[in-house]
Length: 249
Image (cartoon, rainbow, N blue to C red; front, side, top):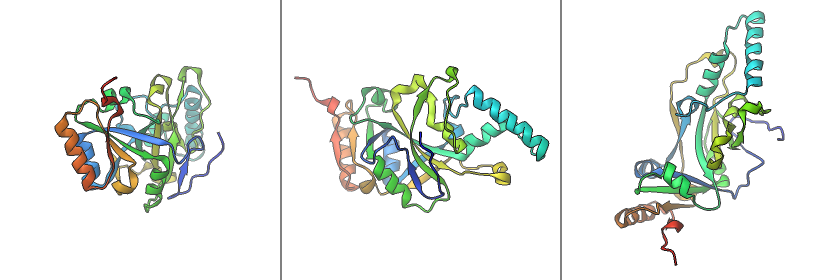
């Protein structure tokens, strides 16, 4: 993977991605209403995910960080353990997670849109980059294609900055085909010890500029489909039925 320089406030896109790549976010009705009414996207703090393996280091990286912590303790009188370091890294990054695909996925409907009253928001990598570049953020910003790895094989991971550890997941999750948008506080030195209060942050977007369309669940009742169509018209966003809702020939 080519070396990338991240600069505060400038969005860096993974070279494996194209601006036209389609991204999907499967949500229930409540999250859709929050998105449309408040015109914002939620970014979850790295230590708030349910999966305990989020932000997992490989055995080699763990040993290297442990050695670095011991060296800092001896030479700089900075007393950080590996667990404290990992905890801080997980607190300083905020993530929005999307499914990359040219078409909708029944597996994603069942896992993340697991209600008949759900929708999928679709956008592109380019639209996301434009939305982030329009913000006045003091973050390291990046859009990363998740790589699925076998941690037992102790793979060589590119974690520069350290928050990129969230760009890797266990290969058991490869079906997710995930793209992650990173907001990284990038705290260094004494600031690294400053507590992070927010469990999540919101990024403002204009739905009509940001979204490609809204796709209604294939299991949605007719009243819900009409409600979403009306909402989409109000916010000037295209709305289409699921391709999986069509009766077979």
